[in-house]
Image 1 (tube, rainbow, N blue to C red):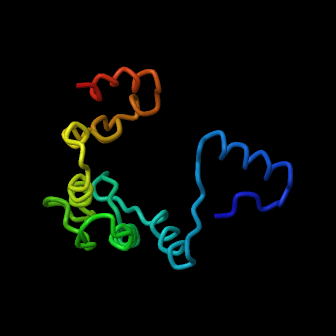
Image 2 (image 1 turned 60 degrees about the horizontal axis):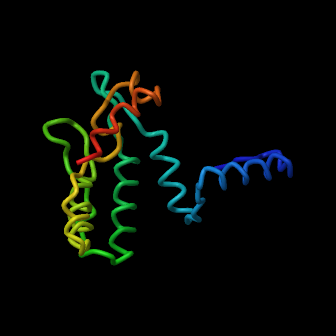
Image 3 (image 1 turned 180 degrees about the horizontal axis):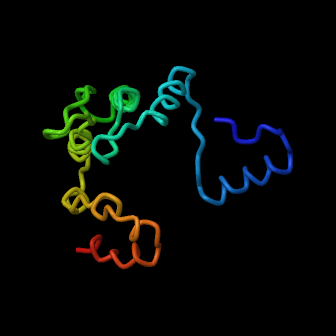
Length: 144
């Protein structure tokens, strides 16, 4: 990804400041990983108005799954994609990775917390997701 094609030192410094302020870490990737990510970014197709991942995005899922397995922090998880219910696209089936990660959590209080995810996993609405005040009203979902 080219962020500052002009190589302007002031713009570069400001961008570095933005990354630091937002606590964003830029991780190095291999050329092969970058190619997979680049293809996945542009690989969304439409099925009756539903956005669905294409082959390149599914390949990116597999790359991430293999990276998870290579880290060896959990038992190995099958990195292949699965069909999403009866629809015509594949997904990683990330719940399988969540389950293996939870097996490693020793604190029962932490392990038994509800798995809610982020607000966009249960509120599929641009009106909610694009308005921070509305999204904040859903904070109660995260409390016991």
